[in-house]
Length: 106
Image 1: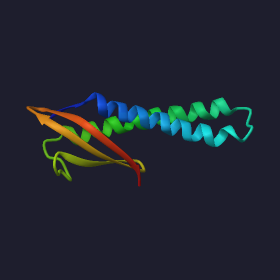
Image 2: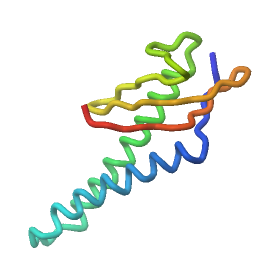
Image 3: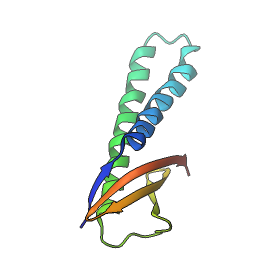
Image 4: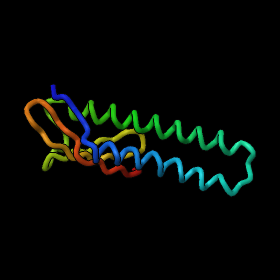
């Protein structure tokens, strides 16, 4: 089993995803005149945090295994819900360090 860590760039990519996810829904609902706009936006923000945590869990499960599916040039594909994560990592001893994460909607 491997230990899985994220470098700063990969973590920032996840954080950037959260901000974009929240902003999309904030922009979508901001023109509607709904009185409970803040509650709706907060729900989407909580949903984004849940997605981020799910991404992290699935990345850890996928990369902690001794044998990784779809391994090519230290890149693997991880699917979580309706998202596809292309994960590039570096390997040193028994540690895999995530260097880049590309998130796309399936």
